[in-house]
Length: 351
Image (cartoon, rainbow, N blue to C red; front, side, top):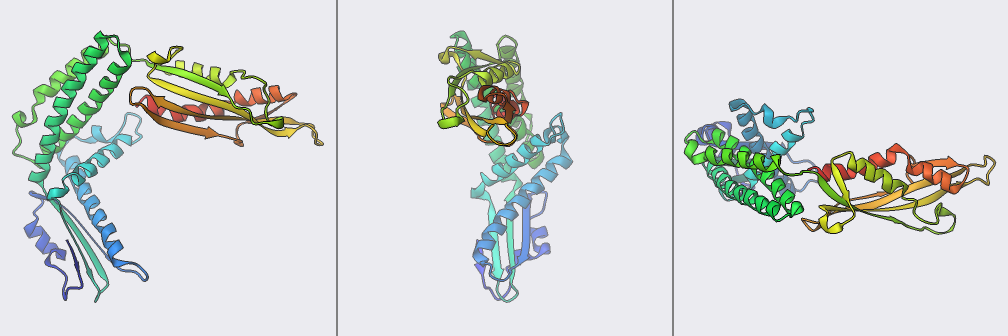
């Protein structure tokens, strides 16, 4: 609810009122205030401040979780990257926003002072209801995903089985999240409400599947040479230099390269080309070429493109040689080019 231009600010802007009417044992809250600057639009700033108040509310939930549970294992990856912490905070924010039907949002602008205020609040009990609903839903969905993965394995449909296993893992991660949140926001929840036995059974079922299932990723390579015309084309036909390099690199990263596209989880289209950098006719007599690569990764299970990359005339990917073929070949063999492509592909297929 937005209020504008009242003779005095609404009562919720006062700390004492919020402390009495929104006690932390029953509510999570977020409150922000600021002064309107010259040439700013009060309405637009209030909308931003409302989002900031919700984010602050989410942060209060995170702080509560960290103080009341052993949540450090939720916050850090083994390598200390902090990606899990980012994901955890995003989940809290998303789940809070998903309960907007029960989320109180207030904002106010006081023209006489130029002050802007925003306040967001949600009952712990409403959050608990949402978390429990999501927990029960994800438990059922995980059971279905695991059962379907078994059926796909029996039918020899490895790609579909792998997709369902991936879905089950994601759901089990979400179940762990909702269980953690429930234990914090509601002291009234008991083990029966959170159904730990079902989760334990799902983990055991998934472990049994993984113990007897080949988890390697199956990938089909579609390698092409693109002609750019004139002196840019160092090769008459594709020497497959980069294709062979990427194939080897993927094989070293738990991927199986197949010649049968129908058996593949992913299709990697890799299109190479060359650009002449110098033709050797200057005073230095240097022949040099850029190695270019563009491509896309297609998920055959989800039926969508999930990664694209374009590397053209990159200052890090060129080489000199005694002929166009020699120069371009050296450029395609540069480790930096392989690294740039793998950085686009591996995080996606290993997610």
